[in-house]
Image (tube, rainbow, N blue to C red; front, side, top):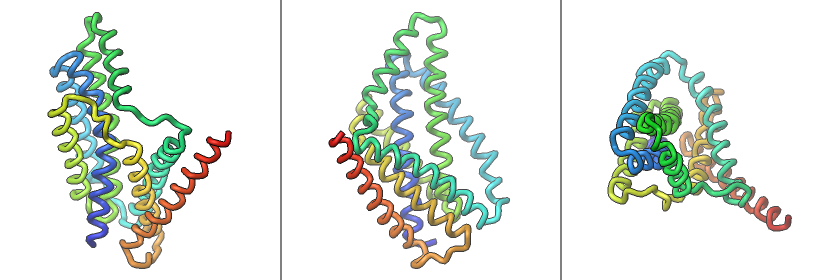
Length: 244
């Protein structure tokens, strides 16, 4: 284990988890302020319990997969996952897709919950909203932690990076009681997309037996190359949009 691998793994897990946790927190906060803490807490707790079961069931199975095969499979999945984030971040940065607005998402969810308030099942539906938000975003966090950590045996450190993101968001959210709209989400997604794609290329290569120059330091080189291409794509698309 090198310092480069350790730091890049923790940072990738932290940044990716930060985005997912902010999105889940926005929905849970809307439920709390609209219907009270009880349905929000019950929905969140149920989702976290299910996520724990998923980790306990599927986590040990990774030890049964040969390392090179695991690196290849995880690498390919990370490339697909990272490029999806990167593509959307590029399109948002160039103005082809609207930037994600946590304030708007919070207002939309609050409006939906308020319209359901006359329904006897309002608390149940509010709890389900919190459950689905935490579960969906949580599954992505679990995947990211396993993906960026498993190939080099750094799952624990990736998990600590994700945990730090959860603690940070909950701490700030508890203080301000507002959706964290000031978080530069598209910038984070841009960075995470670059990191996950770089990890994916690196581990796919390792799974195929590639001898990377500089070993783990090659990840930084891959990041630099991908960043140049991504920023170039943003500049090109921006000019095309302005010329249209």
